[in-house]
Structure formats: structure tokens, C-alpha cells
Length: 215
Image 1: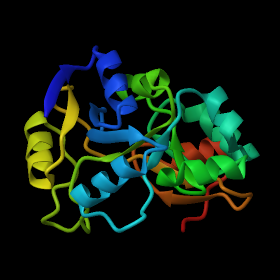
Image 2: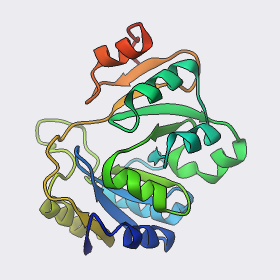
Image 3: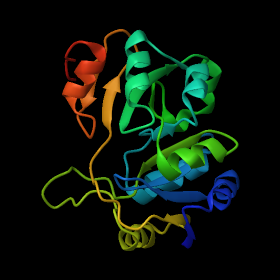
């Protein structure tokens, strides 16, 4: 585990380009990141998290223009991105080019896509390719004994040690919010709410002019 300040984005980006893992703080909790075109890094994350095989990571886009180049935006997706990106909302979006879907299997198709603020978003802008990310924790069932993703540097170290993973870690102190992204499926015209999180369903409804069904 190599600890660096959140201002040292270049070191984080170089680590991603070299095929290493990088842990980045957000207001919600720490996220472990990899090159979205690197299946070996993806496999290491899955094994470390004890995550179901082939379960995709999230795609962190560098900006909305790049997102629109890569992904198909429905009218609902356009409204939600305009209202909440960068921020605590993720959208399932379909790839425009099947070749991109085949290259970035780490994040799946459709891809759970977010435009993040803070160091995570900055890292996504600096890396040469696309960034994939997931929470720093052993996958669980969210039951009463599941404390959820790491929100402190000590919890990050505990996870990395237990998972036998080496990573560059950006020290963001304590992540205060400890709550999920809101997820909306905009992969087609049947928009629906997948998971409520920091962006309240009423805020989503206000942006779209209607309440969404849930899956």
C-alpha cells in the first residue's frame, strides 16, 4: 500500500496506466479503481472483494462530452445528467459502438456510468483511458453485520491486507456521508429507478417531471 495525497493525481494516473489499482476517496466512501480495459486488474478486484464472477464495475467518465461520445443518451438521461452531473447519480447507459462494449467488458453493457466530483472525477480526466471503479469492501448482503464500504484510511488498509491487494491509496481522511449513489436505468426508453441513494427520488422526479417506477 502506497499512500499519497489527493493532490498527487499524476502518481495515481501513472499507476492506473501501469496496470495497478488506485484507491480514491469520495464524500461517500473510498473507491478502488482500475483501467476499464484491463481484465487482469478487474479480476484482482473481483477476487479481493469476493465479488460474483463477471459482475461489472462502474464507469467513471471524465466529462459529459466524452460520455455522450461513448454512450447513447436518451432524453431522460440528458435531463438527469444536466441536473445532477457531476454528482451522486449513476445511469445505466448503452454503448454507441459495439467495439467499445467489447473493449470495456470490465464495466459491462449497458454500463453503469457516473461523472464524479472531487479526486475521483479528476483521476478520470487525467488517466489515458477510461476509469472503472467500485467500493472498497468485501461484497456482502447489506445485513446488520455488514458495515459497508471503507470510510477511513484504516479500513482501506484492513481491506487491502485481507484481500492481499497492493494499491496506491489517496488519503482523503474520513469520508463523511457513507451512502450510495442513486442509480437510474436509462439504457432504453423504459427509464426506471434501480436504487435510491444520495439523490432523492423526488429530486429525480422533479428533473424528469414525473415519478419513476422502480425495478
